[in-house]
Length: 246
Image (cartoon, rainbow, N blue to C red; front, side, top):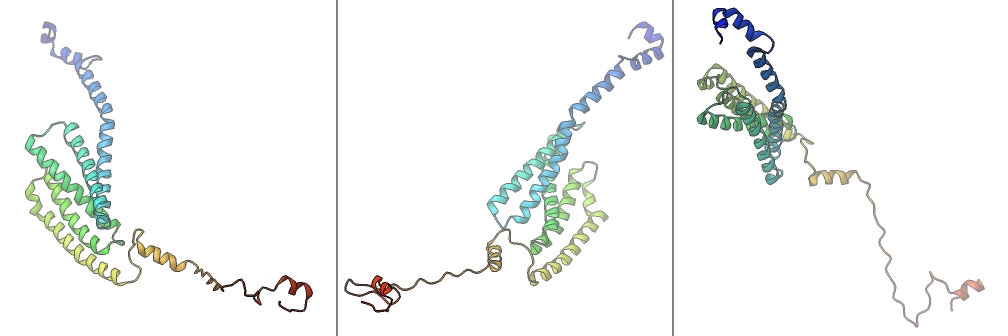
């Protein structure tokens, strides 16, 4: 700082705010950084929903094809974890230490599966009533605990506070209620869907018109000495018109 600026601090402060000053350059740099991070923030935001969506479908349909839906669940967890790393570490103003990073990664994975269980159980409850009755309350509890652990501004002891107790009671009531609904749905005919199993093909065949093929007529052995049959008159019988078979 020059001697004139030292003698006149107001002039020095005005110089910082003037066009081309340090304050103006700092604001421009902040705007440019936000513009550059638009793509990253968008990908991080979408990654949460895509990852949770893949997990929600996988945890519900897992019994149908365990190998396939295990892979889908792993893909969803990877997408959700990548979004967490992008939002919590790369775009964060202050990067946490290694210990906090491990806690956030573990809590994020638990949060992704909790959200997936909750949303998948609700979405496909009519298709898998018994499984949805378990996934919905379990997903509610898991997602709440994981969210509290993941958020650095929330104390972990809040899990055992009034909000945690309310979540636990809600989950228990949801389990009891959904289990009764699932039992009534399973006893009623026509509940659920089969995702293209043999039952669908069997029901589809019931509506198809039945076609029967006539049985072929038994062949009658012929010998060179045997004459023509009555069903097939000879050329001479047809020509003379007397019906005499030779």
